[in-house]
Length: 112
Image (cartoon, rainbow, N blue to C red):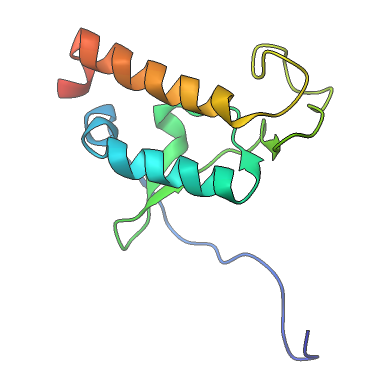
């Protein structure tokens, strides 16, 4: 790193997405989750309230309090229901996303 470079995060305004829009953008949500998994991490708490939108319209996942590195032991502070075993694994995220989309479609909750 050069002496005049800084490492950090840029704050930006994110927009809340209603459940119906999260449902309509399910392919983008799945793509964001897939990108996270390809980077070697799992979210652990994928819910509609943890899917937001950037100013440019892109999907952003937030709230990484239960996240972990794939294949690593789950931190003791993470509840047992997040990962069925004590190892971080992507299928837990995938199951939650699919369950959410199924329940919304089944109950037509996403159509509101």
